[in-house]
Length: 264
Length: 258
Image (tube, rainbow over all chains, first blue to last red; front, top):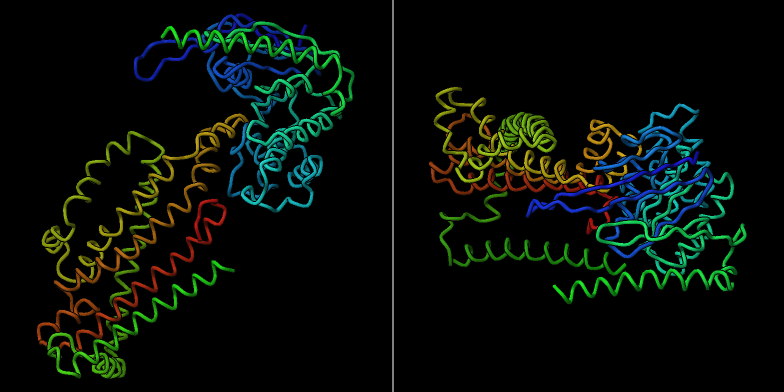
């Protein structure tokens, strides 16, 4: 059986003013194998972040179920760690303090916290900056800390919610390559949300394309580009074909969105 | 570098204007433009200061005032931070305390003075009680808003690592509120001192406020001005100490324009 099994998943929200109920995600079914790198793409409002947060155990499910290693997800757990968008680091803690944070919250007892934190900081290439505070770091460096914090707790599944969304294009590319380098070490199952098509292809074994109203899965695309990958793959024929296919998907979504706006 | 230059320039200009006022004050009286009965002169005030300093009045008044200040500020800090933390974390507590805060903001605290006299008598306990109420509000309000406005993204990140509500309070809400709490304490210090001096004006037998009314009633302006100047200096020094502590605690804030 797959490591992550999502069945008939539905998540409803109540609009704060009108009290109207709407579905952020509906009828989502997805299986993810151990060690797979899965990216989730879709235009904004397609429920891709909601789906990720559901796997993280941070939102309540309205219908269906999520199982990880056949255990039902009912809340956050030490088998998962989340890399958030920017601004999720504690600004009053140093890099090391931030990487220790997850370990402290999980009451980690696998040895010296400092040692563990420093190991992770070196892994993401910030060895010299362990005493810096987040406001002294660039956006890319902050996201390295974010990744180190998640990896430190040694999760079975790594969940990433547009972690490079706030970075400039160039830094983003570098971070993507870095992430793959780190991931190649022990190939933990990874779920990565993005709206960037190139990023989605570059990282993935499997791309989940989502659509809106309500958020649902349109297609799951297998990516067979050889690993380990570097920037050269971006210019390959296979990559271009995938890019074209994804673009078509997203363009379709955009035009239907415009249509809705015009009708309304 | 440029910033330092401007800070120095600001300090220089501030000092210059202070000196200017003092000089003008002296000239205005010496030149016969203003009756010294109303405002005395800097040189007379200085002379009186030396007299009061040597006969021990300054020490006695300052220590009486600081004694009440320390008690009221200490109590207000403990009560304000505890209540503020509770109200910031539990919306029900905030709702229950809300009317008292409206009260405190809209009604002058001194109005309660006679009531406190009835309960506690003239003197130190009443002065401390009044100053306590003066200082309580900003400390409470700032602690409350610091805890209440805990960054949701940070709380969510903490939850994702399995943090329990109390972990979030202790490791996210509380440290994140320290700078706002310090700002509350800084405001509280000024208010506590004001509270002490105002209460001393009405009923005390020692303290700077007492000295101000005492000499004021005797129409001895220069002697009175000595205590007024000391009160101002105390206020400035205490607030500066707190400002300094505040700047130490919020160095991690990106927007701390210091």
